[in-house]
Amino acid sequence: MNLILFGPPGAGKGTQAKRLQETHGIVQLSTGDMLRAEVDSGSELGLRAKEIMETGQLVPDDMIIAMISSRIDQEDCKDGFILDGFPRTKPQAESLDSMLTEKGLDIDHVIEIKVDDDAMIKRIAGRFSCAVCGAGYHDEFQKPEKDGICNQCGGTEFTRRADDNAEAVTARLQAYHDQTSPIFSYYKEKGLMEKVDGMAKIDAVTEQMNALLG
Ligand code: AMP
Image (cartoon, rainbow, N blue to C red; front, side, top):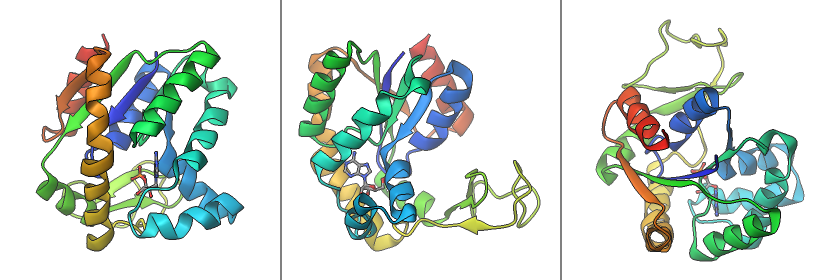
């Protein structure tokens, strides 16, 4: 099963994708995570992407498309994948279609996580993650059970994303509405578009997703 998750920054795509990865045995492919890994490694792609990402703009389509195409070819994607943060523009959606056709693959579900923009700014401003295992937390909504210690791995180092500041978040939301939302009609025409209420509690959103996926 291959699916696409849509939602503005902070909607919970990553959180839900990680849960689906565990329950459905399909791999989360987050273009944001892949780009951050490139930035950390100091690769040429990472150097080109760093500044663009920090200002909340979108990285050029050709860079993203090549990156995701080679990732889908890897062995761990053979039982299915969850696209988290891709496609983000109409050319990316069209390239995805032709790329999948060439590989003999299809998209089975496209799910939009619907949320309010104002709530997203609050959610993003407080989020941080474990520097060791990547578990996600929030200053207000999801603190570690023991202050300063990761629930999952016991790590004591935490990080915040460079683009989780008010200015970059505003640009990211703008990019979502201007460049990503227009793709919905593309998937509606294909009869694939579904949605869940992303303002519900995390578990309730997962339940809605599972109901759609069967
Ligand atoms: P995310 O982790 O999905 O919020 O992505 C973080 C940043 O990475 C975005 O604000 C963009 O700068 C860049 N990015 C991630 N995915 C894409 C994509 N599909 N197209 C263009 N830029 C992307």
